[in-house]
Image (cartoon, rainbow, N blue to C red):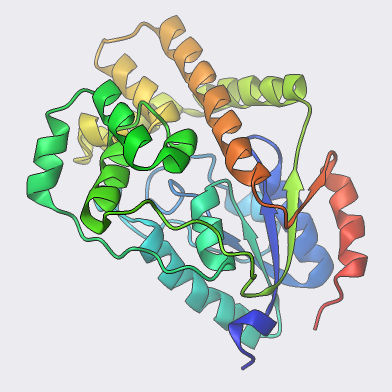
Length: 299
């Protein structure tokens, strides 16, 4: 087996609702590849509609990995992802297939691509309890002081993410590691960048479709199976606002409006993260990305 840096890897990134999943499958069909999901919510069992998890039919026969691997009651962070994803990538390459990493969780993708050491900071119950006494605004302000770069891309209303980011910064005494320029793989990184108005329309259309598909019932079932309201709230986006609707904290129209606005903010944070990466080749139309493959011959 060749060393990691010699493995060929294709990565598809972009904001939510930009069309990453479909493009990854189109590429896989062209290069005889398998897809490795890099989505921080799609790893969880039972979180299907709300996370936009691809269905078997939508996979079109392309093997997918890193989906449905852990209970939503259990914490799964970037360290866990990196370890499992690297193993899967090697296995795919051993089968003479091309690994295609697709997702919108930028830090998870960077953990695979670049040579920096992740801080293996375990949960500190005492520290978390102290931080949990603070308001969400206070947590965000504290993070801005300790790790301004992370504060720029984190969901400022997601207490779980804020507390975890602070936990790392406080325990290590330094911010989350920044990117090193050297790629670990022979990688083609494709970014999908759609016009803002088009992206917002896609976000809204997808949200309406998910509600019709039964997203509210899905989130209700998750709670009934033992996933706490707090945990659902901390997953953010659809899970946060639908859970608040189910608790009677929002009416239906408020829930839809809040969710839509939160997803738009999330898409902007994703782009803020990805725009820092000068290795990404951006395309306006996913179909144009296929043309890039000719300059990236498979080993």
